[in-house]
Every structure is written in C-alpha cells, then in structure tokens.
Length: 290
Image (cartoon, rainbow, N blue to C red; front, side, top):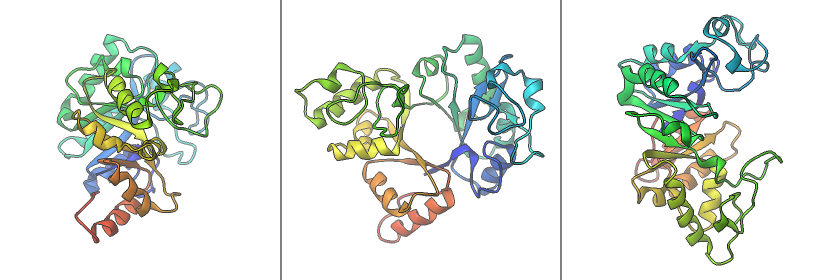
C-alpha cells in the first residue's frame, strides 16, 4: 500500500493540516502519516519541524509553546489555515478504516505521563493506528498500539550527510554504522547485514514494521540482501520513505522496492505512485494499492 506522507494526497492542501486529512479520509486511502510533537503543556501538535519560523506565523521552538499559543498560529503559505492537534485528527478519522501512521518526533526521553496521553488520544482508533519513531527508547514506553521503528540513528547509507549526523562511522560495506561489526574485516556483506538486522531488532522487539529510507534499502539490496524479505523472517514488515514527485522514474523505483520486499511506500506523490503501480500491475499480479 501507499501511505500519504504528511496527509498529502492531491497536494492542494497544507501538509499535516485537517483539510489534508479530510481529503485522505474522503478518498478512502489505506494509510496516512502525520507528525506529532509535544508542547510545553503536553498538548500534542501535528507539525513536522522543530522550529516554527519556516512554515508558520510564529518563531522559535515548537516545544516552547503551549496549546493556546499554538492554536493562534497560521501557516505562512495559507494564512487562513491554522495548526491542528492530534485529537482533531483522531476525530476526523473515527470510523474511516484508514490507518493513521503517527511519526512521533520527540527525541528526548518521553515521560510516562506523555506516553499515557498519547495512548489515550489514539484509543478511539487504536485498531487503525501505527506509531513510529527513530527514538526506540520512547516507543518502548507505549503499550497497546502497533509500533514501527526507523533505524536511521543506528544504520543508514546517506551520502548527503553533514558532520553532525549520527552514526559517525562509515563501515566497510558503505553503511554508516557505529557498531563494531561495521568495521570488522571478517564478515562478508550479506553476513554483516543479516547480523545487524538481528541486533537492531533487539532495540524494539515489539516493532511490527521498520521504516527505512529508500537509499538505504537499495544499498542493502546491492550488498545481496532484500531487506523486506529478511525482516519478514522475523515477522516484521518493511516501509520505504519517502517517494517524491521529483523522482524521475517512479515505476522503475517501485519495481525495485517491491523486489526488495517493501510492503508500504510512504510518499508525497501518492497519485503518481498509484498510477505507476497500476502500470506495473498490468504486466503481472497486483503489486500495490492506494
């Protein structure tokens, strides 16, 4: 399936806005993704960046706001549109059957109080929720909801990184990885990948899905391992992020991702991706849906 990144479907609405969520729900998309940040008073704001300046009429850090201050802000691109909260999105999605993928942006250790607030907010649609994060230490605090782990902080192949990015060690097989095995001269590429998958699964054994960037999935395939197939051995599915409208060969990329065992593609261009997937399906069994 495809997941609408930041609730983007047609592109006519502000990402992460209630109008964008409404469009996805009306269209019956199988899954949409939103970003959630905790505010100073523990309110849960639907917003991507850590700073307000670029997208909104406000300035400074998002987590310094309280609910009232956040509710007064507007998007710079559409000043009639205000920011929304997690509870607003849940209300719009009740009874829809669309899966809500929550990208939890909190990186500092999450308190038990915040974990319970998040669980309570999602309880009305808990049968159709997936909570994901790079911060596995925070996902461990959550109970009763399906979890998705993004291993970027431990393992990725980003070539456009800056000096402050972790991990800081480029391993022998072209993956940034601070684990000792990354620079060990003995394991071959396939043995290395499979061993690290087992290690990383141990960080969040409850995860039902991994969310991995497209470049890393393709790099691992070049090392001889289809990451989705490898994860499936442990009962974990694979989602790839993020397929964008600027991708020059959407059909070719989808073909490669499906070949790596990807089950879900997170995308800013779901309509383009769905059309490309339909074209692939015309030549074989159905491969995806929107």
